[in-house]
Length: 153
Image 1 (cartoon, one colour):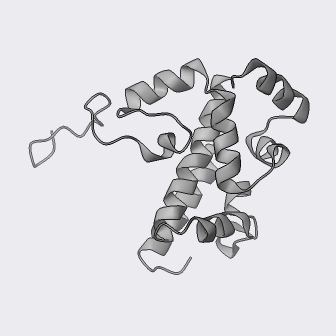
Image 2: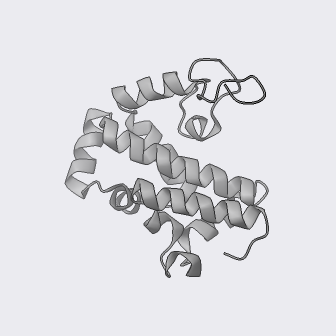
């Protein structure tokens, strides 16, 4: 318990508003528990296409960002489903897009531009390139947080 009498553990089951970065992929869930179930089952290929459109990337660009080769991407499209690890990576990118859109006050064009342009705070790499790993994605989120509070990036 914290000093305010609430548990410090995250609540995985209590419904709240839909998780916006999942909704961007066409996945309508209110809890992280349900979201994990969707990841474990693998997202539909349609979720990939939705994020591709939202980012303005072609399939091969987004596939490369997620570490999916063109041949594997063709197989996933034919199967209609991504694997759990691919779904997790897709969700990570969607979460960053969601955070960037919020940073730019719902201006999706500005958010896409920021995500795809080299950034000094990331060693000259783009935020999307830097987010290929969970550690990199967290660093991009830290950078977004610093920008939200007007701190020099």
